[in-house]
Image 1 (cartoon, rainbow, N blue to C red):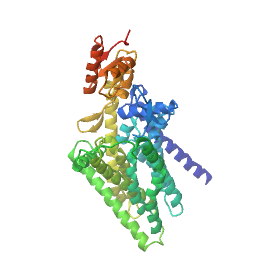
Image 2: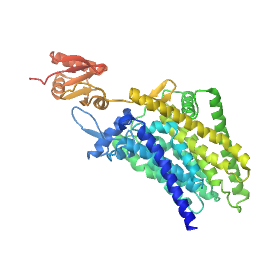
Image 3: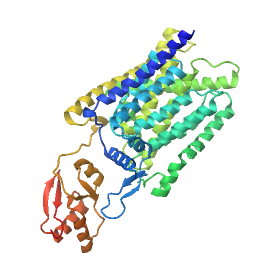
Image 4: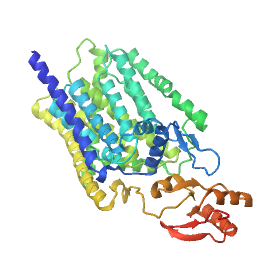
Length: 513
C-alpha cells in the first residue's frame, strides 16, 4: 500500500516537472541571444522596473527637461514591473511563468480531476503551448503572469466541494485579484465568476447565491488599494484617461472571433466550420451537464455525485469565464479606445476555452453512462480541437523561430496581413548631452541617448535660451519639433541639421562656447 502511494506521488511529481519544463524550454529557445521581443508597452514595463530597482518606487520618469523627475505609475497595474524589478532576466521570468502555468494545469487534471498523469501532462501542454500564450511569452508583456494567477484561481475553484467551499473560494478570489494586479483586463473575469459561482457543484442553493454575491464584494476589497492609488495619483480609478472608441460593435465582434478562431484553425473555411461545430458541441455539452446537475440538486440530492462531475464543473467554469471575458472585451472595446482585439488581447479567452475543451474531453472520455466506443466518439471533437491548437502553435512557432533569426523579429500573427514586430535598438552615432524628442522613452531605448521631452510651446526668447543651454540636440519628427527647430535656428544660426535614423537631428554647441 505504502509502495503504491509512493509510486503515485512520484508519478505526480514527475508529471508536474514535465508539464513545467517543456513550455519553459520552448520559451528559452525561441528568441536568439536570450532576448525577448519588445513593444512600447514592454519599454514602459522595463522603465518602471528600473525605477523600482533604483529605489524610486512605483514611478515613471517624466523625461521633463525642467521640473519633476518622476510621476506615479498608474497606466498599467504594478505586479509585472515589480517582478521585473527582481533583476531576473525577462526571458527567464516568462519561461518560468509559462512553465508554472503548465504545472498548475497538470495539478488541476491529475490532482483534482484524478486524470491519468500521462494524459494530464498532454492536457497541460495543450493549454500552455497554445499559439497566443507563446506569443505572450515571447515579449516582455504581463499576460503570462496574469494568466498564471488566473490558473491558480481555476485550480482552487476546480476543487470546490461542500466541505471546503469557503476557503477554496477565498483562495480563488485572492488569485483572481493578483491576476488583475498584473493586467487590468482580467477584471472581466469577475462577472464570469459571479455566474460560475451560481452554477457551482454545491447542493445548498443559498451557498451558491452567497458566493455569487460575495464575489464582486471580495474583488472590490482586494482591488481597492490599487483603485485608491490610481485615484489619488492619477485622478482616475482606471489609471489614465481613456478616450472614446472609434470602432463599431460588429467590427470588434468580428476581430474577437477571428483572433480566437485563429488559435485553432488554419486559413480554410472547412476547418473553420469544424472549429465552430466543435465549439458548439462544447457549449451544448456544458449546458446539458448544467441541466443535469440542476436535476441532481432538485430531485436526487441524496445520490452521491458521479466521478466525472469535477470535469463537468471545470469545463463549465472555464467556458463561462472564456465567453464572459470575450463578450466583455468586445463591449469594452466598443466603448473605450485601446488596441484592436488581436491575438494578445484575446489570449486569456483562448486559454480558458482550451482549458474547457480539455475538461470536456476528460468528461466525455470517462463518462460512466457510456461504453468505450461511445466515450471515444463523444470525446473525439474535443481531442481534435486540442490537436488543431497544438498544430497551429507548432507551425507558427516554427515560423517565428526562423523569422527571429533571419529578421530579428518573430513576426507572430496579429491579424490578417499584420504581425507583431520587435522594436530593436538601432545603430546611431553617440550624442553628448541631452536630446529632445516628442517620444523620449522610445527614442532613448532605440538610440541609447539621454533623451528628454520637448518642453510645451509656445516658447519665449528666454525659454529658447534655457532650452538651448539644457540640451544639445533636437530630433525633428513632428510639427511641434519642427517648429521648435526653426525657432532654435533663429537663435543659433550655427546649429547643424543632418539626417539621423530616418529623421532630422538638429545639433548645436553650448551657448558661449
